[in-house]
Image (cartoon, rainbow, N blue to C red):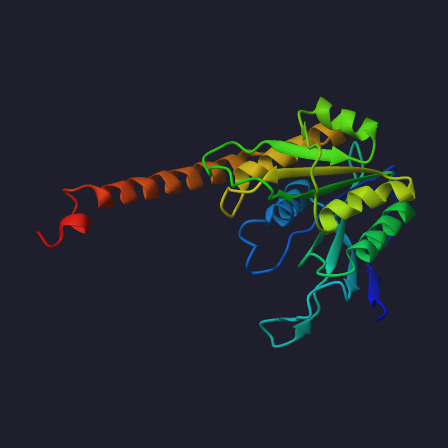
Length: 256
């Protein structure tokens, strides 16, 4: 069966040595709450840095479902391309969903597009799920790997813990390993899952790594505020749970 694809180019930006950030999360309802880090990071960067929308990619790698809009019209799932011109020009690809098939072919489409735009680096964002979930009150550690020794060294320089001797699954990892076939250096940037959605601490940790390695400035204060709100809600929930289990609580003594 042939792979169907359709590019919709809204603008052909003139960019200088742009780095591509690939931030695509799953739409699978079983996992979206745990693994939505990439899409959240993309949304945050678009809002904070003022990325401009310039392309859409439609393909049969996406789930076989359409979005029905409020006016009753149907819309295919798509990947959106954005660009930002700064000290270092950036391309950002995010999506309504991650590929459920043809991960190699989808990676190829994005990498060919990156090369066409003059990109020599790709940064893929995601969540790692091989380890048990971290505590939602814990500060996430940024983890990663690269296509070669130079990318690994650069990740170490900005405080990323390098993963070793383990598999890494799905499109967001494949696109990194495939990058070297296009003379593009690939970087994987991830965190262990565990923080509930939204993931403000995890997103902040990865955004700060990207800002260091790519040389852009971004305001992290909204993420800090969101993290504080979530932490207070979690603490309140834990206290309510402990109160419920105390012998004098009405919850455990209602029949005395």
